[in-house]
Image (cartoon, rainbow, N blue to C red; front, side, top):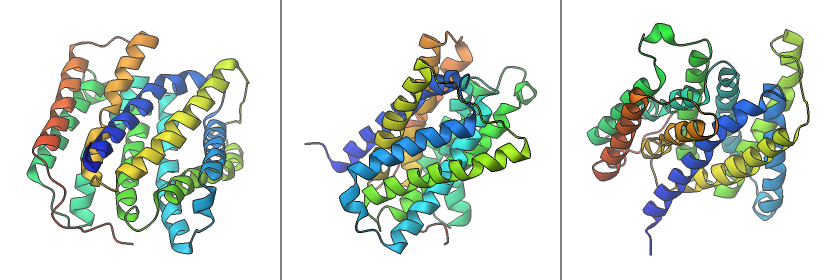
Amino acid sequence: MLSKRLRADLALAFCALIWGATFVVIKDALADVSVIVYLAMRFGLAASIMAILYWQSLRKLTVATVWAGVQIGVFMFCGYAFQIFGLKLTTPSKAAFITGSSVVLVPLLLAVFASRRVNHWTWAGSLSALGGLYFLSVPREGISGLNRGDPIVFACAVMFALHFIFIGRHVKRHSVAPLSFLQVATTAVLSALLLPLVTAAGWEQPRLHWTNYLVFAVLLTAIGATVIGFSLQTWAQQYASPSHAAILVSLEPVFAALTSLVFAREHLGGRVLLGAALILAGILLAEWKGTTESRPGEIPA
């Protein structure tokens, strides 16, 4: 019988697999749809499915649970908005690697804002993963080789780091099903509300061209990456600290690179292999030697 901790670790690794595999899918889908329209469709469909699946739990919602879910959802929305706007300007594997830098931002934010002591093995694992992300995302010519999409995706990494932290903050106080639904529903609502504002500001014109591939992409990301992925993540973070969860999910760019290699024929050189090895080393360090944070501090309300 697997322990709850091991099942949580396997669930987070599976989430990384799902999310990593969808980078290429989303990149290709953006040929047929604008970013905010895509977000509204994906998360609107996912929220509708989750409302059906979790309707009994949702009947018992409290104001405190709604507020907790909305907080998590705001960071989810910001993370995906930055990620997909950046993905239009960079490659799928690079976007995934930069997103994965949240692995070191989580313990840094916890240490700075929550006065939480982080085990030195967790720091070592996080820094090893960050080194891997550098080799995977930064070209040989250095930072000057980054494109306009890369800093936008880094803003996404900050948002996802906060997403990990706020799930860890709330999941022990509220039920998993309502939190899973509320964060997705919040993202859907914010996407719908932002659409006319983005259009009026001239940042992006709404665009939707229905194709078989777009239908496939929306279904895959709504059901697989959102309904299944975020439900599993929220459940798993009952048994894993935010830092530990972020390190496991740093497998996401490795899966994204492999998917991009197989389906998009994106070239992966020696730097990519070195970066992947450092990420895996970081995960092993944190898994074998790391422990959860020794003080249960949290981001202030």
